[in-house]
Length: 189
View 1 (cartoon, rainbow, N blue to C red):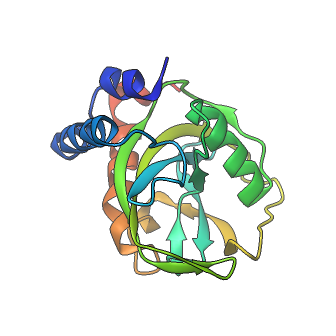
View 2: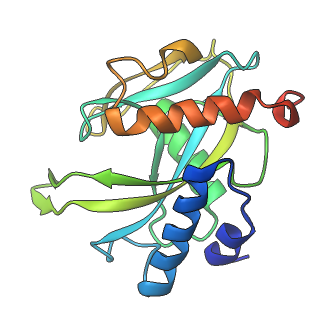
C-alpha cells in the first residue's frame, strides 16, 4: 500500500491528528516527490515511539540539529515502507533491536526543521511529515549513538517526556503518544 493510502486509512487519535492528516494528504496532492529530500519544502520521515516492556519509559536521542531530546527517527529517502525505516533508524541511532508492537501507523505529525548546515551545505527550513510506529526494546540492552547525529541516547520515564530538556515542538507529540498508549485498546500490547 502506498503512503497516501496508508495516511488515508489512518484513524486520527484526536483533533490535532485530524488536522495533521488533512495537512499531510494535501501535501501529498501538492508535491510529486514527498519521499525524498529532493523536495526541499518537506518530505516524509519515519520515527519510533520505543517503549520498555512495562510501558513506563520511552527512548529518546539528543538530536544535534534540535539541540534537545526527541524520539528516534529519520528520512524516508525514497522508501515507501516507513515501518522498515523506523526500525532501521532506531538501530542506527541507538544500537537497539526492537520488537514491533503494531504494524500500523501509531501516530502522525508535521514537524518543523530549522535551517541548518549538514555536511558543509546549508539545508533550508522545511517540514517533516512524520509517521510514528510503536516499538518495544529491552531497556537493559547497551545503548550506542552516532556522534555526528546526536549527543546521546537514554530511556526516560513517561513523566519526563514533556520536561525542559525535551524539544519544545515535540512535547505535545510525546504527550499524545503516551496518552494514546495508555488508552484501553493499547493496554494489552
